[in-house]
Amino acid sequence: MLRRVILAVLLGSAVPSVPAQARECIEVVSAGGGYAFWQAVGEGANQAGKELGIDIYFRGPAKEEDRDAQETIANMMWDLHCQALVMAPNAPERARLVERLKAQGIPTVYIDRDTGGADVAAVVATNNLRAGQLAGEEMARALGKRKRVAVLRERADVVSTEDRARGFIEAATRAGLKVVRSAYIGTSVGDSRVEAEKVLAALRGKIDGVFTPNESTTLGAVIQLKKMGLAGKVLHIGFDSNQYLASAVRLGDLYGLVVQRPREMGYQGVFLAYRKAQGQTLEVRNVDTGVVFVTKGNIDQPGIAKALY
Image (cartoon, rainbow, N blue to C red; front, side, top):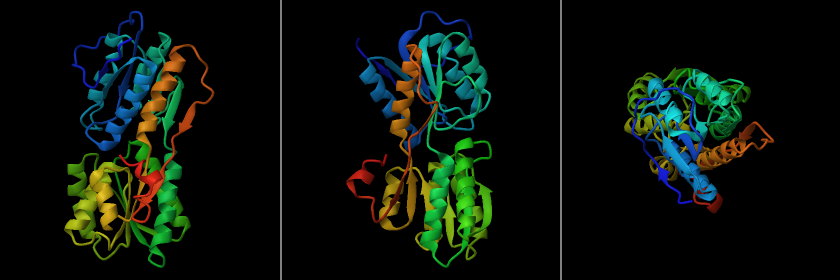
């Protein structure tokens, strides 16, 4: 059939009634919008839709903290009559929708994070704890005899970034580093810049390294470190990628990035949801899409460059 990829849909009323006969489509809902990470998730989902010959409805809220917007978008499943839902839940309450969908024979696959619930068919995500540990190990290796680090986190209720921060702190502490400050700087780039400026100004001369667990916190911190003349002096390891962050690595403003595989998340999420909707048994519930550690020394190697987004 002719495939239509629909990147935006109008937000109409979403009444949770029993869906009509399921269509050859899958709704994919991101946790937030605007970042290169989620754009790459959409690319992977669209590629899977193309290969399967089905429609992909991809959308997410403008801000990750906007739980109501994600709920409205996710509830469009009832109007779209798609055969499955793929979602990066930004609140544990999404489990209620997942339960209702399962009762109607419609499977849900989580991507990027697992906020709990027994009714999810599968979870496709980075092993965030291990990814954070990798960052901590690389930080300790790069700092050598220097020991003082800060962790600039996103938000306490974002499961994925909290696991990364926890993994980093565990590995860094085990390696002999001292976490002198752990602070939350927000989910948007704007908030991250403002809050990072406050935290970094107070820590000037008191830290040797900084870890940031996602794209927005990494952008906020690297921009402020550069503004303060500390980029490349305070060793910074961040998470995710975009053109600005890749350039910062090449310039030495960022020591390294833990880069996920969001295209693979979107791609695998759609394929698993489709298979489950077709009545197939999924061999595994949790799929780890892996990470690569990107530095100035390897960023232009073919295998690494391909992982950037």
